[in-house]
Image 1 (cartoon, rainbow, N blue to C red):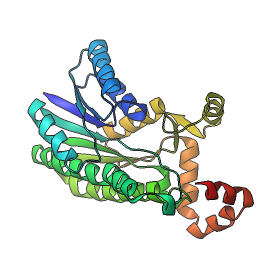
Image 2 (image 1 turned 90 degrees about the vertical axis):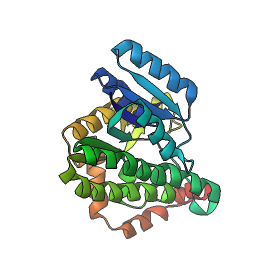
Image 3 (image 1 turned 90 degrees about the horizontal axis):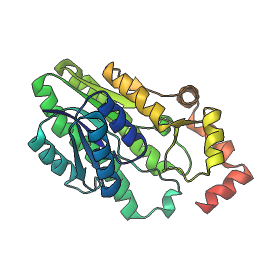
Length: 262
């Protein structure tokens, strides 16, 4: 039996990847460290779409997480699609960030996704087919104050995924990197009116639209996906603008006061 494996599947974009993949008739392996919503989503998708859904309650920041996911999935069937989506949003000055949190976010965003790609990607290459989707971020294109840790992990994912695309393409395995901007998920602690305003003006995307565009890009075996017009414009500006251009912005008194609180 073939499966699509999705990490961070219990909420936000991951849950939308799961729902839209199930609607397309794909069997799923859903991975998260939130057991109750994960089990509820798995049962709902299995009942609604008639697909097989397996769930794994695993802390993906653990050093052996990738191997545990691989061992469990291998016992159920063949993973021909890997969607590496799990992540957390982090704002704050780097000097105020604990070393424990650095370990956590680096493992979650970088180490475990790379290990998952190594384990499942090797199987896909041997079979001669497969698809991998890796969630990076708009922040991978330029440094952002207060997002030095988060953004740097997304830079690693960008470079890793692009390199992997070159390595695996001749083996019949596609690698698609998705670079979303702000997404209306629980990661942002915003009020309902603020989120509605941001969605209306295209500054913030819905999780459903990001997942839909990411899946479409992956199924078309595209190398890169930047969902949303606003995000596309920002990415182009970030690629052209030197990092030093941010210095006048961070010197604005109101901005400095915000930075000093983080």
